[in-house]
Image (cartoon, rainbow, N blue to C red; front, side, top):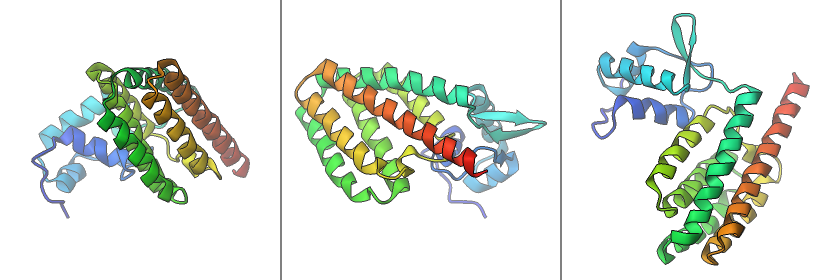
Length: 216
């Protein structure tokens, strides 16, 4: 059964959002006709969207089919290296440019997200929104665009590092420290705090992956 039509979004963003929220996971096959039916659009824009997603390496070929891409260990390492650098820059620029209202919103987000510590999936979505708010507070449109692509690619990871025991509470504490540095206009401190936050998330993910391999 098709969903209601989405005139406000094109086929590319509809598919992208579905991958982002886990409707389609790494390894899932995407079929033009199924997608057209699901989103209530014709097959031509679906085909163009799939080609664009393949160009961005979010989809990959499996014979004649297109499937949601999976990240190798090296690709994941490369992604986190780029994310660490760009997120750090966003925090530095946010410390320089964020308005008082934007900083207040960041504090409100941290306080609200504390209630989600025991719900890794919900906390993961909230974490994404928190980081996006910092990106916007950098007041640099080109940086925001690049970070959006990085975060889209993060959706190719089947699990969240926030699922690790105790990680949610620690991450929330790290978020608060980042906002405090931004509020203090401490550009170096904000950059360092966010880069450390990303590094810890990466190490946590590596440990989760190692544990998963041991169980196989």
